[in-house]
Length: 325
Image (cartoon, rainbow, N blue to C red; front, side):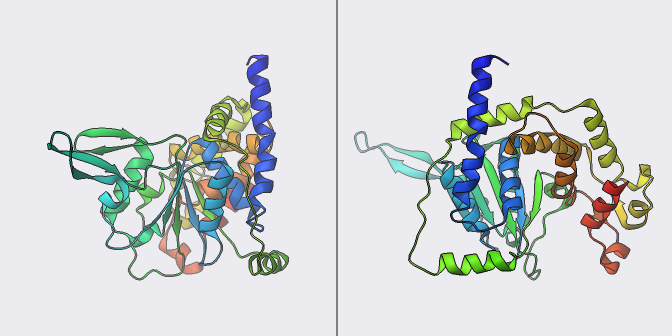
């Protein structure tokens, strides 16, 4: 890496603490979730966000997009939402000079840098598939024409863990397309007290733009260049392979798991560990990066058997046991 390029990357990485500080003006706590969203953005993937109503999921995503000067769109998923409502549709227009009529593609809300897919499990599989296709291909195809999505591009889908009636759970193969599965917990007592004080008065924080979309694209390039030792790659491979009941030494996995994570989980763990190093202003991966990210990367890629669900065993319990070994 040339000296000039290195200096540029170091100046960008130095902005990351300022970015977190700016987000903290609006979002109280939830630092782990904010870090994981930034990690997903730098690794070039998408994330699934789960939490009960009222934990400021929408506000969190909107605040991040404002601090990054990125175009933000929110799509409320409902049972009657159609693929055209997401990707866009053709409309008939008339040329006022010639009087000729023609079809023009009207871009949908998917054409943004950060897209919040709110309650993705409330819409039927046809509409879910349209969103997931855009996630994977980074483009939209309509009437045989390809339309590239803006870069950087991040989809954050949310799920409500409480209500199951009238929902369409994502199939496991589609869940695997999400880089991270982030779980939001309740705030601590002091954090909740701060929320009550800061959100019920007249003060409204003014956010400053810390980074541009070009800065994020450069940081995505840097993420790929972060050093990870051969030993840590072997460790990641062993962790992922040990989630599979057919080739594991873990009695926990053999007893409670139906099937384990595929190779995409290993790729995600390497990339996200590199991204976490960048978020923490480092240029090499540490074992703690892998251990921290094993949960959001593996929890939606491991299928538990019926006995595990009946006993209240979660995928996080399985991951915790694997990391101990």
